Length: 625
Image 1: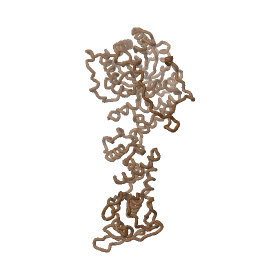
Image 2: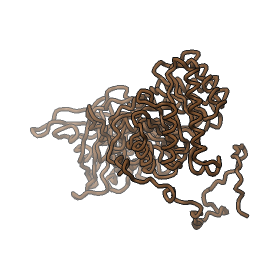
Image 3: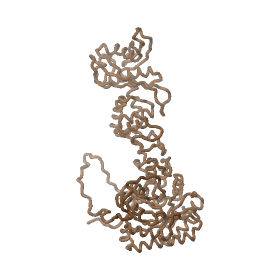
Image 4: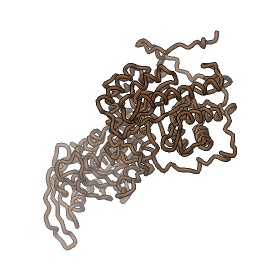
């Protein structure tokens, strides 16, 4: 039999069963099922019945040609619309904490509750009024349905406030008129008009000395025929007596997202073009996110002429939520537009929101998620590293980072993280920023292979400390088969020989004394090693790259040190043998660091096992195996 269409409230039970898919193991029938067609015949296109006709007042859509040039008026509905969607609605403590934070962020219009529907809401509104917690430039907004008893209770709740928005609503959509109310247009319009009359009468008599604004919402506006939505809004404005000095807020909500965001923009532009007293109304938006396009709908509707946006922090709200005020504000900020609210400590806003709503902000949430300013991809990491290095003092221009994380209280150390998808750019960035070790580009690529093997085998992210430890183990602590015991430099013996170097090298359990001369201490050391260790077996090595830099400023730096890298390759009969390898040395003495780097490179050649360079070493030396 077909499933029952009877509505059943969802129950959150501890024993709720969830099917889990495991890996395909023996006995676990893991197969790829063939797709089944979804029941598309149950649904009709929104625009198959809803038309937005061009006419003399709206001959063409002009919003695609416009840009958003300034911030709208913002209204936070976290304490009302957001609160009603919570599994555990906020208590007084949480409401107060969130209200105070919204003030700190800079919101000047805050919907604080539905006083006629909840004693908690009524008591909270009375508390912030009676204790003088509402700044003089802030309007508190309260919601009520167009019913006499509810309106009277609402007026009682806000008595004594300085600035109040009285928000009245009733649903006007074709579907709700037909299915829910079973009433025609005139009856729905009468409900709005009579409610506004009563609200105005009570406000005039009970709220003397209070700055009162009216907000009217034709709920489910996006499912309401435009001519009817216009008719109801005009009637409400007539009853209230809207003027340029006493504007009515016409809140045109996308209560349920029903079409693409461009359709909402057309609806808003149509209303802006047809309302008879445009200068006497403030066109407000209240987008929801059912189709995942709430942000786009709000931005396009602002381009279409809207003045104001209602929403919640991090998109809290019924079903998939209201439009996110944080995202909208920071979208403006990244375009050089002052959002008129301040998110310079996004972590605090997240903490308070999560405490008050008991809802987590996801890791990938726009602008705010913990992974938003993190790059794992190797090419992304490399581009970020180069962008930060090239950054000037004026415009922020860094690839993959459209906002400076520090502007919202984030820090650079979280930008680059390393896993199996990362590359040399991110690895070298962490080595440099955390430990002050700067490697040449080719050495970065070589060391990246070391890190890749670690991440491939572990299947997880690797920390900066683990990267550093891998570098030290692979380059600095590698003391087999060769290690430098000590050395001494003196003046060379001839005109073209500037330096003589004597060194003691440990090979396994033995030590060997070497002597070399050259035009510098590096060439003298290389000559001495070749003569004593490799030339007897017909081999020698050459040094092709050399870099010595001071260890850069970083968190972990304890003292001034030199970081030296060299690249060596083995030769036999003048031909290169095996792959060249880098070595590294770190020491307070630059000369010592360079000599250690040469030994490090030779030990890495030996570990690779693809040359016969070490075939003539004493038998006590460890083998490559």
